[in-house]
Length: 310
Ligand code: SF4
Image (cartoon, rainbow, N blue to C red):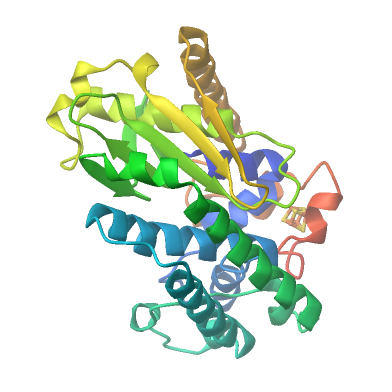
């Protein structure tokens, strides 16, 4: 049983949804019900998909160019985003993820969208808006020349790197969008968000990443952590949430109290998960062990609606 920020958020929203995603879904499953749940677990809303495309272009292309000290051409990057958009949309529209014996590794880009899978469809206006939001988010990033210069001054860049560490008798993990390391300065952790209103802040998510980086470095440093990481305490780490669509950069500092609260949140999360049997294997538990969502609005956009026994 693993704790992660996003996994525990899903668990708090709906224990049953977490169960389908984490216990029932399995890539090697042969049983028809389990295979269907595995497919459903990949489905996304169009808003989540739009955020994924922005993450992919930043993580796979922009940071790579920054790492190589290459220029960032806006037209070229937007063209690349369009290519990802079109290839993924085509994949989702044709429901290729439902093909028998599909080897996902053969596809550079793939996606699965809830409204295409359930045949409700996505209208052109919604698609155009998603594409415009992707462009606007990337333009807002590229306009932050000070931030880009700062990122260029780093000595190492880790994008979407899993950071795992033991937590009591369980495990916890984090996957920050970007961590930059410097020769003589503390690490800086970034999270990119593409939210239309961005009323929620994500300091707690970034704190969980800082906690993960510090713990993993104390217990068993990952091979790509720099040797100077131990020269800094977790309180020195820098955290930034960049709400790309509304063009707002949110920087956070870290206090001792923040770290204690983060640790308590992970501990109480793991206990809550353990109590309902989240540590069990598929054949040791059933959907009835995992309560359904408190808030019925959680079900509206849920990818498991078609199979959920409420
Ligand atoms: S349909 Fe509702 S109750 Fe069922 S898994 Fe989804 S969110 Fe939970």
